[in-house]
Image (cartoon, rainbow, N blue to C red):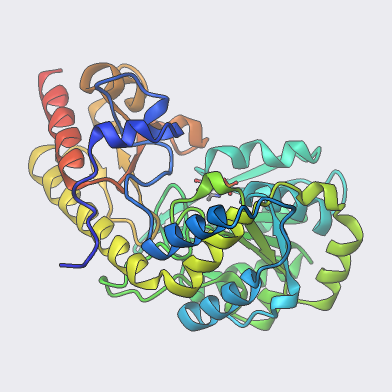
Length: 389
Ligand SMILES: Cc1ncc(COP(=O)(O)O)c(C=O)c1O
């Protein structure tokens, strides 16, 4: 039992918020797709937002100490050493990834992307005029992992940067320090650069054996010297509409290059409300975060048991991080992509696997950040539709 109520949000309230997850689906459909949570936000985050509003603080945002709060959190929870003065604010994580591609690799050089990948990663390199060299993830004894030989080949073909997603959306892996050191060796061999999207970093259940996600830059000095970390409290504290994120740089050279190449207009869009919410999340949100991670983990374990009992053909592994589960329906040979089929026949909306690129065929991504009663209803519908097909 925690002091937080994740069980009781009603469908009426969820729809009344008017944000993408519930807004973009028809009445009666249970939406377990876009990465928003169905929970009320952490009380300190809500208070920070309310006091910003009460203060009419709607001018152009200036540093409110968020970078110090982020650095303190990353050190306390993830053991990562950050110089707060090397943190740069950006409006959202995807724009941070885009600016990092521009800043830390040569114009025209391809970008390596492990696949399946978070859908917009397929578009961001193109905004900088870059091609993508995609490298399928490989299944190993300990789960999905990076194909280091494939990544090595991609760099040998001229790529200069790689987008890493730690924890990994959509596969739910949290890479270990050893796996990341392996990547660092490959990247170093080619003088490449790692853009590490760690927006899901805080979303690792401390009620499980793991304690925290391992930041790429924390595994060695070498890794820090050829990487930047892009993040925000937006995903883990459910405030992605407030438009505040940051890029953490690790060397003086990186800071010099960023300040030289990134125009202030490219980073506009950060908000005073988002800055306040992010700061409160890192300063005072840990109790809520631990509780929400455990609630999501319980949902993930419950789902795994029900699928094993009722739909054993659906293969699924409990995610180590993120609140996203990756479901493999390929054994059922559905006539269309599983997300499409389930929307039609079960009235539940998941993200369709093919939108994540190669490796997504036959799969769908499920969002587990939802009250248990809604997950149960959705899974009942899934079982009924699959059994009746
Ligand atoms: C891995 C990853 N990166 C970035 C984003 C989007 O972040 P933002 O809205 O800050 O661009 C998401 C959203 O789900 C995500 O999963």
